[in-house]
Image: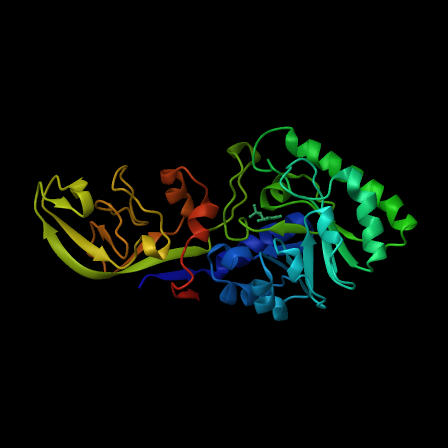
Length: 341
Ligand SMILES: *Cc1c(COP(=O)(O)O)cnc(C)c1O
């Protein structure tokens, strides 16, 4: 079976870079949703906590319950409103006004507001109704937040959304007095927004991809020195010689242009690597050519090494497949053994 090596030093470095930008580690919320972007939640969460991270985000309650012991609080982003319950550390994101009507008393919530992404969130003119419901239902409002739709693109939209969020802050200041609600925390930035935002002046930034070592911002925003944490390795199952003009694998897509070594390694698309179709010259991390199509449980590579690093930079695969690093990482099967060095 393949294995995943996680490099502690790179995680520490990335967190230092992000903490510096945010004004302290205590201002970072580690986004650990979806098995920590494929890195492995059970391993990654305590390591992030060891490095001084106090706050986390998960996708659902199951993930939150697994890791709440390591953090002072965990925000659950996308849970169904029927599931919400009172817990000292778990904070449920409320993604629409309607959901507020059924949240049990005392539940800790984070109010998602829509500043232009139009995917979910309370609209600015619903803010007063939301405050009324929060007060009526005696909910514990932890924070108000929003999400940018174009943080990693050069466009004015980022600034328009920031302005909208400022408006929400001003409105809430007035409403909190009227409805006797306390002060709240504000957070809007994901990785790209934090790295590009100039002076960071909010309570928290929600960092996912940059913590894992990637930043999809255009070159114009500069380089930040982040390093990928994850490396995917596979072990050799068998080796053979392929003669000139023999074709390797399903469909015979790869034809040898000379006699060469071809080894079969134990990772395939069942492990969550994208199914390379054998065209386009994709290579392993050390530059060995992948020969033909990726199979379900294996991959042929022009190499004789016992163990081979399939990738240590997900952007290589992301670029080949016309997708993003998130997509390559998050798909890595949870059953692949993972370990930190
Ligand atoms: C996934 C997610 C993030 C993290 O985004 P990155 O680009 O990985 O830093 C932040 N906020 C919300 C609401 C998210 O869904």
